[in-house]
Amino acid sequence: MKYSHTFQNIKSFKESNFNHKSQDCSWKEKFEYLHIFKETYGHSNVPQRYEYNPGLGAWVGKQRGYFFKSKISEIRIELLKFLNFDWAPGKYFTFNAAWNKRYQELKYFKVIHGHCNVPCKYFQNRELGFWVKNQRQFFKKKVIDNNRVFLLSELGFEWTRRDSFIKMTWNQRFRELEIYIHKYGNCLVPQRSGALGKWVQTQRDLYRKNLMKEDRKQLLNSIKFIWEPRGLMLKKNLSSDYLYSARENLSVGKKITMANLFLF
Image (cartoon, rainbow, N blue to C red):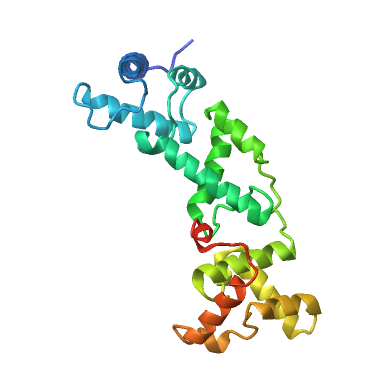
């Protein structure tokens, strides 16, 4: 029986096996240094320019990168979790404050929309949409603090996002349009901005076809809704009279304050 393996094949295999073991030993060594760092400073967020061990900060950053690309073994994940490893800490000393800020924004989002399913491309607050997505990923990988799980669950947070798009009611979209006007001073929502832009265009289409319900037409007229925007779109700015009247009209009898709205 003839073997097809050449000396070079065997040599390459041995070198590859040796490199794998070497890398494994190197990982364990870095992990031990991280353990010492954690015992010393009380956290595992090593600065990139940590003078006592210059390569440790870069190694910590790589573990986070491997984690989000699903290129790290479960054993290593468990070992790092043992050190309360922060997978996405931002700047360590402001991490909790940043999380709490997004949490408060999510609470306000729920007051307005009745749910916590912030779209990733939520034009009013894109960072909040990505933050919500990250919380689900952290939960799935079991690397989110139990206290945060409790706070989000108490808010009615959906940990498993439904595949189908959450269909918002007409009134919820109308409320979203009011917020848009408060922020931008007009109701000319671009269609490319997402669901609200498409909804606004649908209202205009229904109006042109004479299929708009009277009560809805009155509500839209009450906020100075522009049914035929083509002429206005040619201008760079709307008249100051229109901007003033749109904002003034919304401010009457509304409980929304400008301070809250600028959260978005």
